[in-house]
Length: 416
Image (tube, rainbow, N blue to C red; front, side, top):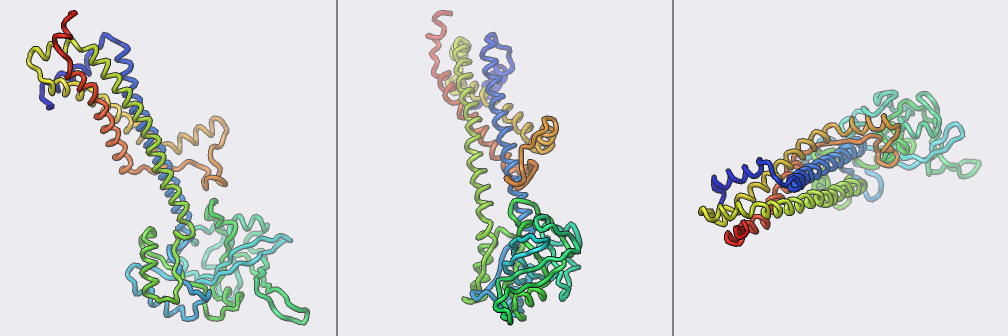
């Protein structure tokens, strides 16, 4: 079908200066429409990939992929459970913890919080808490010293800083001569961490040493549960099922998707919807390509008739206009891909420049988790978009090319 003669004439029609400037203008608009659609689609998907990446960093830096607990809210033989977990090749690290909801009070201010007792050395293998601390260090958390590391937002709400005292009020009660009294314990702030906004880590979490937490909640040598780290966090549901089978019915195994999976599913669904919605821009440009080629065919009827009388077959005529339309689609796709890649790589800087120029802020960290526009270009997205645009451009050429092939030489040359 695609003979050298058809290729030569198709390229000739593409390069030749047209007498009808309106058709040239419509061809240019079709090309730019395809390029603009691809540019926007690549940029938008890159921004959504950027949001997905930032959510991953914030969640996985503080939340372990798998948690192994017990249906009685305490594990007394946690050392044995830890040894069993290490027998699994997919388990990279294990860390015990004790957690409970408490009230924190200081300077006549009261805030609820989830307090977690951890082993500092083991926690370094599980989370990025040590790297999130902006004041103090994780190694300052020593058993028996009753030190506490709290989130930056929580510290602001309690109006405390490193060295200040915080009173912890637990739901457990103590019996005394004065009656039933809540359990109180004074802790010293030895560190402040900043995990980032959006998930409430900074406003609702506090960390103490595991031994201090066991004394605070009267756990003895038991722990609430074990945090488990695996190599691929996205495989957590499958690995959790395997661990549950290995540990038996008394083990309660949960994974991060049960708490934060909705965020990732939301981003994936929005990305899929944006892909199909923005593909409509490319589809509109493809329709413009149809109208352009129809007008070209009408203008070239006499040329088509002459070619037919010289022996050109209908397939050759179809090939000429398919090549011409495909070149328009290919050039538009190429421009869009290069433009989209360039914009995706620099969209953060461009948006920051616009915000600085007009003194506005497009993103608020309280709403979008971030106060800047992230971007992460994925070549798989670029490939899918490019292929889709080329296929739509090719399909758009079929009807005009078929119409050109059906041209009757006698009718076309009657009034010439």
